[in-house]
Image (cartoon, rainbow, N blue to C red; front, top):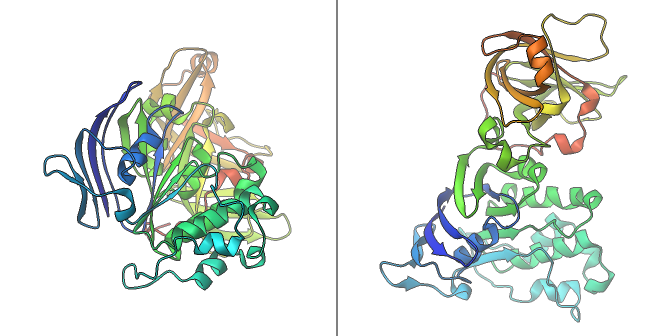
Length: 371
């Protein structure tokens, strides 16, 4: 487990933060550029000394301002993946991986060279130089090099920021494997909400160096008051689901969640696979009566439980359909339909509104048996 609490004044802002990251989990530090995310992990890594506070990993104190403890970065056994891979250009992939490798058991089990190569699928790259690798391949090698240092915890600072959007899906499964295969605790820094929804077990939301919220992804994303920080364009509910069935003829998958079944296209995964579904508020339409003769496959009856008003011509509504769902409507529609808290509505979502970016990776944490 990582335990962090510190205060530090920078020229641009003040960092004031405390949080915990459970062992074997992915915790995301999320916020817009300039909110202090990189500053936070630099303090955890020992690259910046906080003015006040402490850093503990697995019960070991790495920094404590009151006790005068400040372990140097090389003694902390923490891995750090930067935005750019920072591979040595004159070394082969094999030698980049072996640089700094330690024969040191972590939790009773050493992370071996062969295992890293296998999990990251880089066996065919070992004799290449970094100049002959794609951006995604470079980052996989950088991850492997960090793993072979036998870290107790791995920090990743915007690892996909310099990679083309179309290639990011190449890296995401390997980041999930760090938790699922190696049992590593990962601190993942990002300002891309879709990455966070797919990867994170826990979300720490930062605003100008201060913790604005902390909790699971589903909880944070359903809070209307946090939309200015999580991003209004992609604002929407996140549902915890499991694959319930697949229709080969129409390439339609049913995802079961607390509240019903959601139909999506192009997701052929084993029955029982756990996924997060991100339903953007802008993709949800409302009616006062159950629609008939419609092409929309997802219709849910629910009750408006909250109205968010940030000014402007649109409003975001939170609707209880058994799980929280968010919908965005114009002020005119809100008035014309006489919408209000307590009103029963029918929420409609197109099955084709979902792409792979809307569906998070497999979830390994425990979920309610009723799903």
